[in-house]
Image (cartoon, rainbow over all chains, first blue to last red; front, side, top):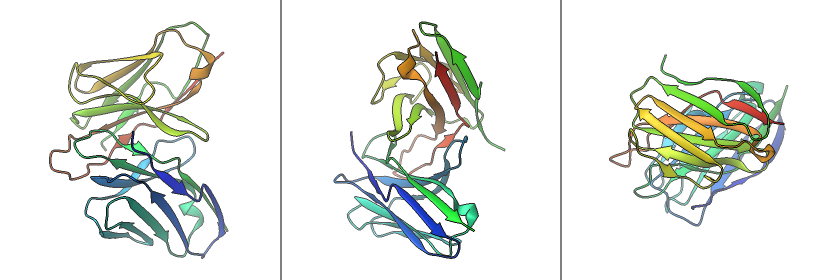
Length: 111
Length: 116
């Protein structure tokens, strides 16, 4: 089983601050996905990255896939209370159908 | 709106009962998955299926079985429920990724199962 380490585990920041969360592995992934989960709900897909070095932007969220396809980061600019939630990264190995998930980063944005 | 529907949001069952968790998707996805989510342990894969009547064990299949008789439906069965199976159960589906396109998962809202 490929392992994904997410850091930090918990993050509490003030509204308007910037933040970055990380997703790291010793394994190469075919693709890596980021999800956000709100309490009592299932995770919702934010983005998929498949090419080493790829950068994708979704409004105030910027996602980057490492050149070696072993790590990824999520950067949020000017965080808002609506960004509060559990952020999960998940990766698929070559020829694999299933995602392996990290344990998540729990983000709280305080108004 | 496309979706994955899990039959129950909350369930309370007694130790030793046989428990069925149902999941239905309306997106014609080939792949379906069952995960459990526990604090500090994250999402762990129990079983998945990439086609009708096909099933593969995930990381923690012990104490569980699955059934996929129709493409849209994937059932998780707890043969004899135990207290350590108290958890949030999440069903997901996805297209089969034939070209490393990284198709995302669509998750259901989850079933919070308590075994007493």
